Structure formats: C-alpha cells, structure tokens
Image 1 (tube, helix red, strand yellow):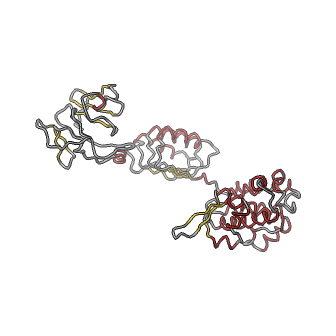
Image 2 (cartoon, rainbow, N blue to C red):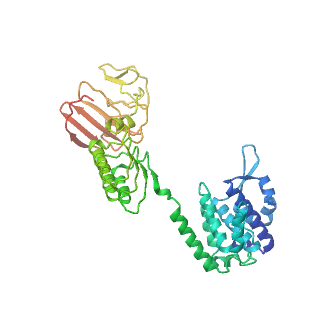
Image 3 (cartoon, helix red, strand yellow):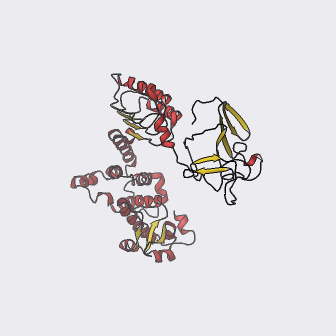
Length: 419
C-alpha cells in the first residue's frame, strides 16, 4: 500500500492516515446502507475534498471514480466494490485498534457494550460475524473476510504506518481460536441456504438430473425443496431422482417437476418412493407434464417471405400457404429471391429450439432450415436446401423420408400422417 502511493515522493503519514480513515468511514456508512454511489455532499460530510486530493495525493484518484448523473451533478463511486469493502474493514479495524472505538456497536445494547469492554478482542470479532449474518443480501461478507485477515499478526506488518497500538494482537491466538469456534457455532445453528434449490427453466435434461441426483442421494445433503420445472426431464431423469430419494429419503419435502415429460412410468417411479415410511416427501408436483405441453413450449408461428419465393410458387392465406403453379407469378425482382430452385423462406428468424407443423398434399415436398446467407442464384448445391453446410432439409413422400445436410443423406421410414 505504501509503495503504491508513495513511490513518486514522500507523503505526510499523518495526512495519509486521516485520508484513509475519512474514506473508510464513508465506505463503512455507505456499505451499511447499501449505497454504492454517492454525491459531493456525502464527501463533504466526511471532510473529503476530491479536488484537493486529486492534486496532492494518489490515494483518492486510485480508488475513486467520478461521473455525471442525469442532471449533470457529480456522482462518485469506488473503482470496485472490493475497494469499498476493504476500506470499510480497514476503518473498523483501525478505529478499534488505535482508538478503542468500535463503529459496529453504535446501535448495540448496553449489555453488549459491557461485553465489549470486558473482552474486547474476542467480542470485536463476534460482533463483526453477527453484523455480516444480519445483512440481507450478503453485502458485508467480504468485509468480514478482510477484517479477520487484518487481525492476523502476519498482515499487520503492512499497516505499520497506520497502527498506533496493537490492541487486537494481545492474546491474538486466543482471540482467533475463539472467533473460529464462534463461526463454527453460527454455521451449525444457522439454516443452510442450500436447503432450497431453484433450477427452474434450465436446459438441465436427464444428464444434468443424473449429476444432481448423485449429490441429492448423499446422506449429508439436507435439501428440503427442489424446483425443476421446465427442465426437459423424462422418465430417465425421474429414475435418477427416485434412486436418490431411496438413498437419502429423510430430508426432501417438496419436488416440483411440472412442465416436464416424465411419462406415466416416470411418475410411477417417484410415486412409489412416497410409500417408503422413511420418505419425507410431502409435495410432488407433476402438473402440465407430457409431450403436448413440450410441443406448445417450442411452437412458433411463421409466415412465408414473398421476396424469397421462386417465381412458380404462389403464396396465399396470409403468406401461410404455398402452391406450385405452372405459370410464373408477378413478383418484382429482389436480390433474396431463389432463381433456380423451387424454394421459399419464412420471414421470421429461428433461434434455439423451434417446433412447427406443416400440412402437405401431393407428395414429394421438402421442408428445410437454413442460415440467411445461403446463395439464391444458380443450380449449384450452395443454393439448394440440404446440399450444403448452411442448410438442412427433409424430403417427404409416400415411399419414405430423406433427411439431408451438406450432401449427406439419411433414409427414414414413411409416416402415415400427412403432417
């Protein structure tokens, strides 16, 4: 720290310590309130002059960032949240070590303050642990790690210009040992956040569920709620979950498998586990499961693009139906129109999984997908669906189906449906 800010010349240590304490107090109060952005008035409240500091010291310019708000008023923030968290820890540590003042006890009860006086080093750490646990969104977690790190003898050699006493290092081994015991006790008594796991709307599939089930079946896993809605889970995934519940039946109380495709056999596997007297599962949600829901999930509504249609293709019914005609259609010239192959593209771009149905009559029709960059001119393979690396096609006839991609063909059995 000293090397970074003093390498261009010797600075006044007392003034630098005052700057760090002022910045630390600002960081502490703003972090407690969940503020990451502050204004010039906030800086003045802590006697911080950014302009003066920018000229006379590298401290502020290295850790502050200045910007302008929507009304052109200056706003400030630390260059990174970790900087704010470290300065918060440094301020609390120095305040207690140098001045016997604990900023974390300002809102503490009288009894708690007496405990601080009687056993300052140990209570200093336990208060910090409690403070961190009470923060709703965990904004004090890294602050606690910095604070405990600053309390180690090995790290205090870097603070020799800021320390005036070594209050915390007296009986430090006892202090650290008691702090570790206190944290362990808190971990045992505090409900684990892993008691509930929400993985809804993930492309988890059966392979992911198999990995998840390996942990779920571990007797040390105490998960109580598992949400796997819309994760593309089939009966194979259900078998993995059923096996995990059989191995570790004592904790899971709620399992949400809605909007998946477990099938009747998958549901039966899980339901059978409910008959185990050791099974604690109380709620099994398999609502809206089945292939029909899966088709609806990925269904898309497409319309045909007349600017791409070959001249013998006639579009009708709102550009949703295409018919081959003997006579040329009166289409204007367009650079995206196919000029040799009887093909037409849809207007809408397709991304991810998509499902649509096509009704055909007459036989011998091709359905395909392609990147927009497919060639539109000539009879070469680079402009024909399924005959290049930019497209795929399925040729449908009464005798069978053929899938094609990049000149490779795969024969498929015929279907009795005309869809």
